[in-house]
Length: 382
Ligand SMILES: Nc1nc2c(ncn2[C@@H]2O[C@H](COP(=O)(O)OP(=O)(O)OP(=O)(O)O)[C@@H](O)[C@H]2O)c(=O)[nH]1
Image (cartoon, rainbow, N blue to C red; front, side, top):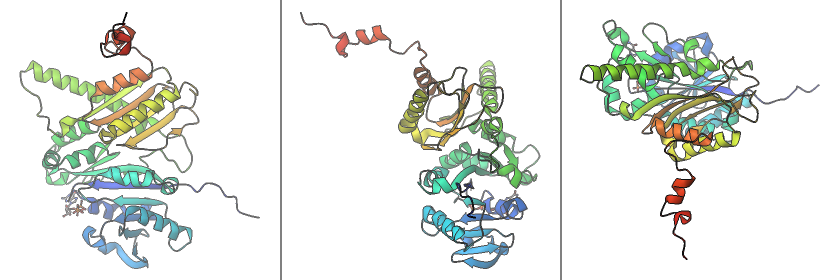
């Protein structure tokens, strides 16, 4: 009897990022001892650089070492695509253990978006790997200064699915409150976990995406955190009123942070599939680099019982996932955005236009006719 063949389940992939010295290697060393990460491949830039040495036990295969925890570690020698393809080849022909998860540690200055682009837009890798999430580490001691000085670190925080605050043990109690508030504004949805408090466990960091190996309907509410965006807006409004009421600015918003906007769009009625595609495509093609994070659950008019989940990091969008049913009673479309240099009003106006809602300042037929440059408005020759 031949074995039944079907699609091979995709391999979850996590990206571990954070500014130079944020504590990525320290966290990895701890995580790799957790049985939840058994059968994991860690891809790093240089073994030497990351100091996993005490965990290394033997050479497993060319360019790869077996860690005492049973995980494999390999360096990115050529490019990431070649490394990921090579891993699959060795796994499929039985030269290495059938790993079940990949963690990519990026260099401190890296932008996670190109890594996602590499995996999600590659015709074969996109089938074999699925993004689990972006984990961003922020150093509690230097975090404020790093966010002030490096736009890249602001972006790393804004795109994260999980934020890990390291080195809080070096600060007095509540010493990181300002940084936590700042991270909340940059990224209302991502849970903030304190490494020194033992919160950055494998269970808390992994499984951040939508893929469930058991095929269960994902916990969309937890994934989307739309309420956190509404809360963020209330907090902003409160701070604003407070600042004005006292004749001073409540907090001095940094120039990099000030470019970031996080908000949630909700809509009761289903939208036409084609209109939604166009809305996303227009945003993506015209403003891709500024869409730091977009996630959403969307009610499609042609098939309102099967909501569609969408998500993207910058111009990199995952293929949309159609759910077999709504995860709970809330059947509204909810889209959350973390944008850079893009106004919330622009997105809401575009959304209103695609869902067919007339806007006060949008050109109507009369306005078009009055336009001296339009042919319809041109004086007729007698
Ligand atoms: N006190 C304290 N020190 C920490 C913590 N996390 C990391 N460190 C220390 O911070 C330093 C840098 O940590 P690494 O783990 O090497 O940081 P990294 O992000 O991998 O560094 P790069 O690869 O150079 O970008 C090391 O000396 C760690 O021991 C923490 O939670 N508390």
